[in-house]
Image (cartoon, rainbow, N blue to C red; front, side, top):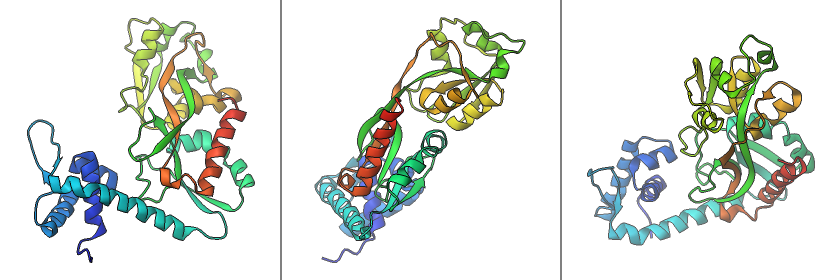
Length: 306
């Protein structure tokens, strides 16, 4: 049967059905909600009936019609098979290219300094890094594997915990010799507090206020604050002596070893509920390049005792 609609319309419908909103689908597909709505309407015109019940009562949320509910599983399965078929077409006699997604900060502070070891072990694998700030759609962007930071739940992806971490304040050694003392936790408030906004939207991400409360500091209002939406830049500002940063242990490890930064008050421990996870689509798990990179990540963590 010839389908007189574009794949884009089917993709817009499938994403809208998963998110139950055009705005959620638009964020995933990197288009506007209006564009998603227009694509869905073109599909509804071809079907001859609505696919969603639209309601503006309370929080805007789409509800699938009975026709849409019957069709959705087959459409989702079709996209999975289409993606797998494209991956099979890419296979050659060599291992091929490996598309990896990580955050810019994780790449700069953890992955890139170690990646040469993977390339020496697997010289036939051409690594391609996707370092967008927003989470990418593995299927539409042809991503093989990635590392994400969170609670371990992402729709359509399998996740394996790679590393846990704790958070603690760090500063440049030059601040320790300044006029403003740092012998007690409450003295941190005399310095500029550097805040990491890269995952601030995540409710479980530890904040300065939470750490200060753990340190029994009643007044949590600092004289100055600096807010940055990149974890690597947060650490660099602390290295430059701008202020005191609330660091993530995985990101800051090399800076502590080198002496660029110093951990303050190591007797106060604060484990983060968030962790780093290896993520991939289940249908891609058996690809040799995915297996190789997954095992290398695990070996790196175990060998370096993260």
